[in-house]
Length: 121
Image (cartoon, rainbow, N blue to C red; front, side):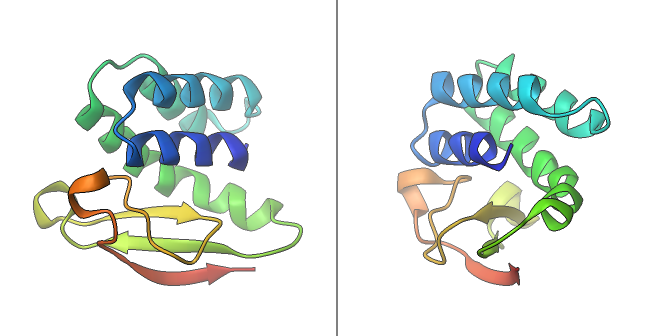
């Protein structure tokens, strides 16, 4: 599931609506029915043609998927990152396998905007 989440994040970072849709579809098909919020949000991303709508749904997906990540991480580290300027300065979080920031909310405009807020082990 995290692989598909990362697919969505990378697509949004690159401003690629169609790849974000593919990642959303794969995540919705992979995630258990026990995680209805994750499933619904990934379907919302898969069904949207609007990059900003996908990014908002991804922000909500990040909040929904955190307990899943924390309870299923078997090894390694995942970085919880934050951009204070996302969504008109309301801020937005995302997860990454890399410590280096690659912002899915602004893409190329502000690719490195953000900081690591937490390391999940």
